[in-house]
Length: 222
Image (cartoon, rainbow, N blue to C red; front, side, top):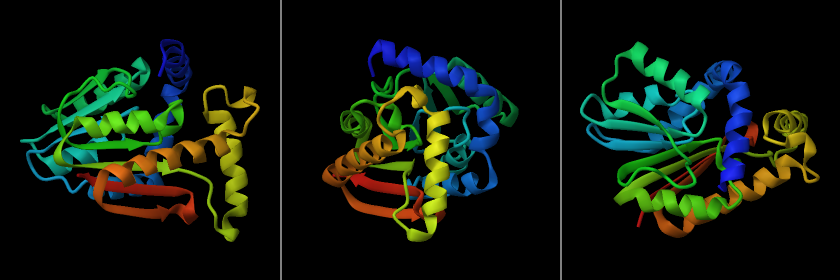
């Protein structure tokens, strides 16, 4: 992500930080997050990095799985999001969970047993390159999980697809000014990210949730 793009994204989400957390921790979304954490197959003592941690909605699930002897690191660009994540950590009293400001497109971490991202792939111009960098962070045999929203291909989900497209117009940086549908662009980017996972990992798994609107893609580094 270029410096101008990074600034634009950070400014956009800074404005949303106060109301973002209730959406990120809604009951149905919590279920998706727990499932994504399970797909990481974490063990006590592991180090896991979340790229684009936002307000820290995934941190409880990751901390629960690595235990007090593990380490959880969240990376995000937006100070307002990180402030809320920091408050979540402080309230829980976790001493092995931390967040740092940084561009997930160029991870400011060097080594981890697992990498998680949720709903951030659409922010990157070249998601395939970014996911490659995330995989480079992993130790041999490490796991990656990509939790993303896309349009559903199920007939019964047609009304949901319409709502999803409108949601993206409001919730994406520059959504109303793009000539191309944010939903179409997001589909393309998620597919590109999934293809990198398919190329560089084994023990791959793919599943859909929420009437096909949410996907969980995982794999173990070759």
